[in-house]
Image (cartoon, rainbow, N blue to C red; front, side):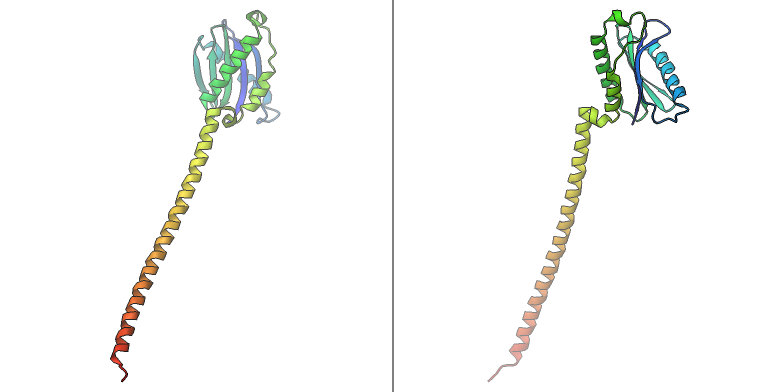
Length: 196
């Protein structure tokens, strides 16, 4: 699970304008990073242009998923991730980023299409690489899964001990029966020889 891109694009007119963006291209070779970065920017603009205000959508392209959240203010947030990244976490992050962007930057600062600085995007890109740590619901779910696995192992070991105890009880019953038979035979043997 990996995030590659977080960006905010002005989408009220075509073509869309990338107002601010952050990319994680470390998984690509040094020679192809520029091409991948350009692909992400162009495709993010295309997805943003096709996202209506108030709409959330996920678009899959090759090995990537583009998560989009269009706002009525004329901007659209885009996250590009691999296909295994949970959409719920991506959309939670989009909501958070869009709220912070609109609170920090009034419409007048970006309405003409100039770039806007938002250094928090780099932090979000790093923090949300592991969706289990970033999303409290997924974190709790993972902890529950780990607890469930531990409980299953404990129950299995208790059942195995129970089987061993059952085997010991059966053996002790067998020994008890054999000792009773030995006692009875010994009593018979001793009764035939009476001393006078």
